[in-house]
Image (cartoon, rainbow, N blue to C red; front, side, top):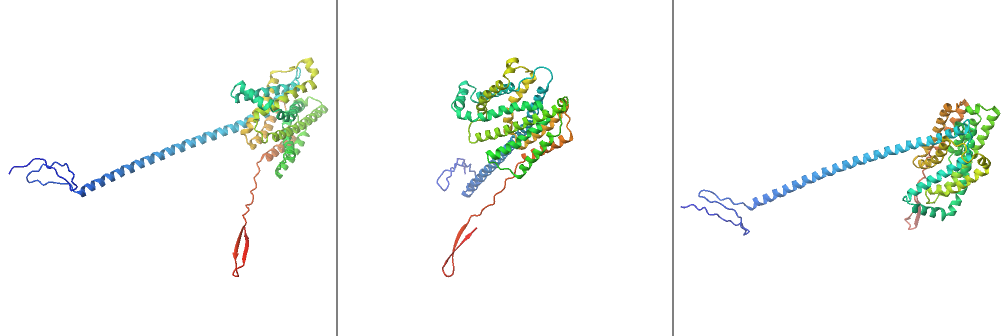
Length: 431
């Protein structure tokens, strides 16, 4: 019998060709895949597909968690950098505040007590300082308006020329600030720097009194106690008789008279400072005008008032010696520090909290006393140290933030209506 080697095409039960080529030889059995075998293969394929999908899902999950970890690390690094930046600004503000408070007072005292040459006029120094402040504010507004002359003129037209009422409102603090600056020169001509720093803390008292009267602001018992301690400390310092080499060189009667004149000048300066600050705060409430434009609005009448003051007080001296008589490089430094320092402090206070400002004021008293001992031969006695300690303690007490009282929660009242056994309605209030 001859062997058949021709291909055999088989069809499954569904009528489709299986396409299997079988070499049927004698003695060999023919193997045909069954329906159960096909189902098992499809199931294996599905399991394999699901396994791949599961592995890809876990891989994407690990990838996502890794990305979340990277984002968290970046967020932590960003928060850490912002924290370092805030600390840098905070302590930089402290140094800047102390430098401005101490530097201006010491430089002013030095220029007002130097020997030899003509003494410069305080009224002209105040005028030059106001002009400098005005120019600085104009430069800032110029930058904020896009560094264009048209933008600057538009700002000035809207907030100055077309708002004469706002400028007139600021004539009051402009006049008072001009008087205050002239009084500070008079005070530092007659008082040493350390005593002046202590006495000038009375501006806390005057500001509090004007705030209570004009703004109806209420203070706690602790703040009123701190104001009493402040007053006592200032009185002790004033009667201590401490002074520097300039006072020691004068006769006792003249030295006492100089301290009295300095005290009166400081008291008047603290009153003008307190009233001007509270009045300025009252005007600024509800106003959308920026700080720099407010300084320009106040600078215009300040320049005019300062110029009038020069020719009312010192017209004869100016005619004889000239407007800038007695001006040295140190005097120009004083004027510049006073002009720039006030604007810098206004910006710094934005970043400094109240505790930091209080610490800066207290620290400036200590630094002024130490530097005055070396430069001006200042010798404080025990009474001065006691009064200074009281003033610093009161300053810290006043600047301490108050705890807000929590209001008791009021439960809502509801009315319940019940029916008794007799059918009568009963109502009751439930808290």
